[in-house]
Amino acid sequence: MESIKSVILAGGVGTRLWPLSRTYNPKQFLKMNGASLFQETYKRALQVSSPEEIYIVTHRDHHYLALNQLEELKQDIPDGRILDEPMGKNTLPAITWAMLEIEKEFGESLVAVFPSDHYLEQDAMEEITAAGEIGQDYLVTFGIQPTHPHTGYGYIAPGEPLSRGFRVRKFREKPDWETAKVFVDAGYLWNSGMFLFSTGVYFQEIARLQPRIHSLLRERGVSSYPELPSLSVDYGLLEISDRVAVVPLSARWADLGTFRAWYDFKEHDDHGNVGEAEYIDSGGNFVHAPGKHVALVGVRDLVLVDTGDAILACRMDRTESVGDLVKVFKDRGDTIADYHLQVHRPWGSYTDLERSRFFRIKRVTVKPGKRLSLQMHHHRSEHWIVVSGMADVVLGDRTIHLRQGESTFVPAGIRHRLANTGKIPLEVIEVQIGEYLEEDDITRFDDEYNRV
Image (cartoon, rainbow, N blue to C red; front, side):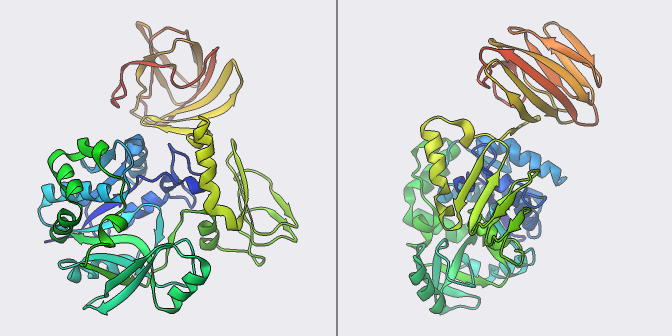
């Protein structure tokens, strides 16, 4: 074996972080601190793996979101390194599929598995690499020394000492506060959700403990996904295997899956507040409202999040329940659970600026060298106004070029395409007019992103 291979799990949706996290722009891709958690995870993986040794497992709807963020890091991603799940089946199928791809490409390997929605100090990678000495005999998980009782994490009870770390005595689920205090006092570790597996040990154990998942994926690959159970690697493998070790990490770590977790992670003012706002007689609050003037008076332990199209206000001790809101929205077919005002596409993005029953105004951004599909709308016409860059427009049987300040009209029923062959991003204001303005009023005739 040579270098460690890496698997990045980037398939979650993060419903507990609504309205920041949406179905088509989930938490791992949000840029809360300049770079996304996904981008930070990829940079960590580069410390132990080359780009061709890093596999990313994500939902197929997020393929280009992941690819775009890797391009921002100036990374040229080899073909086949982004594995697109057709549906979410939890972590065990995702990891198994990636491990099979690594074995096929590199033979027997040592593989580090990283969730893409966690914070971890960069220097932790030395500790992870050092755990390779026991990775030939054990399925290795990494534990975090608790700083306080926490009800949002699973716990690991260390057992017999090994040359590095300990054999795992038992896993414990998320406890109540009193039980968490008992766990901390007993020396339990937080379960970080990061792993180090050798392909040899991993496939021996999964063939023994989950033979159906192993055989389906090995024989049919991703086409077997509809038949696979939804199962986490903890439930389906680690908690029932007798070959599991835990290695404590000393580096700072956080699972940033709730607003309470973000509150704990970020720096506080003298009154325990996080976020830009005017605070009067207020403490212990988390505010995220970019571009807005926010004032809190006499308020304590509040989460206030404003994304332009949605506002969330909840008590700090109820942040675990935010995901219940998303279920309510989805049950009634409300797309507020799925899309932001800015929607990412393979070619760039669009941002809703204003809409009513019969018109909709967007800002469309097309990346250099990219183009939209050749398409047609039945129920709406469009006006395009170029505000920066230069647009190449196919309009029926004509091709026209529009510079800054120029515009064109796209009637309903006419085939059209917008492209950017320039060197800078193209920005277009699009005004849609019609009796039906939703995204599904589209017929594609040619599309380089396989959406026809």
